[in-house]
Image 1 (cartoon, rainbow, N blue to C red):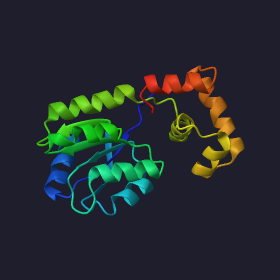
Image 2 (cartoon, rainbow, N blue to C red):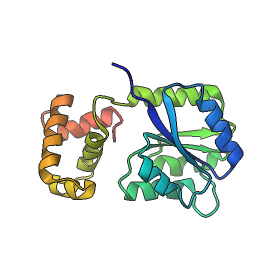
Image 3 (spheres, rainbow, N blue to C red):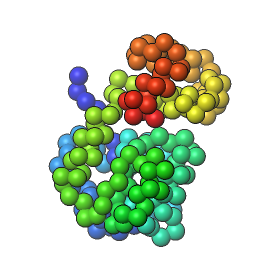
Length: 188
């Protein structure tokens, strides 16, 4: 089975940094850049409309920081993994608290980028659809099928169908097992 491309969005207020990251990512055929923005004010809409798997984002940007963008994405129930790319190491604790997948210091080396992408690939669980992953994450937040359906704009019946398929695919017996499984596989 052919592995799906990792849909990626790049956000940085400096065009030169966007260009450099784009050039570096060309070394990784599994990465597909589906969008980029130098405007932190509009990047949330870009991310929501493109539903990337992975986001590379700067932290210090005028008007809105990368940490604020990450917080906004969580509130919008966007579950893309975020890799902060910054010149500043003093944001690391805040990045961890915002559930950053990784934290890379500029200038980005190909070696560090390769490690981050390999780590992402090893933790990516390709047998689950994006919708199923979203449902698992909402279950972990304590939502029931009705609330998940409302959040994802699907019926409760559809959520229940997905939940049964998820349990089948993961060989979990119940939601508690599933949350443990999702935590171990870094799905959450």
